[in-house]
Image 1 (cartoon, helix red, strand yellow):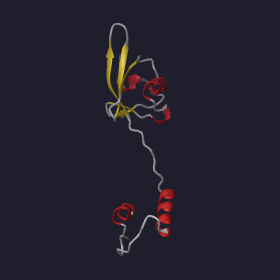
Image 2 (cartoon, rainbow, N blue to C red):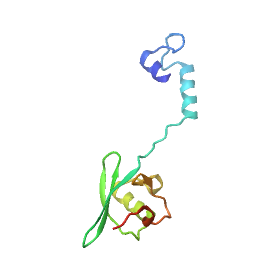
Image 3 (cartoon, rainbow, N blue to C red):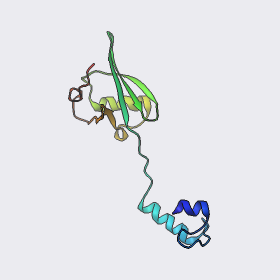
Image 4 (cartoon, one colour):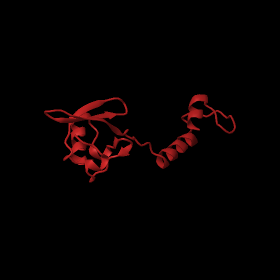
Length: 119
């Protein structure tokens, strides 16, 4: 409804002219914003690849927006440790991260072997 008023400058029910300065319209928008605040949802981080080399193992993490990082990894690491490393490289705080691997969300407290992630 608010998009309709913003684009057509008319009421959706009666075609009466309504401006964005209209007191009732402002109250309506304020009520909507209070009832349905906009939430910023961070996209999940996808673990796309786990590699093992002679010197070190790495895990590739990609955000849905395309930003990507290759991070050091060992199966002994915890999900919390990986999330802290991701925060340093990509920015999202651990509490806001959702790590996905093979369509499963990695949960804090479960070992990587549970997800069949090996170095």
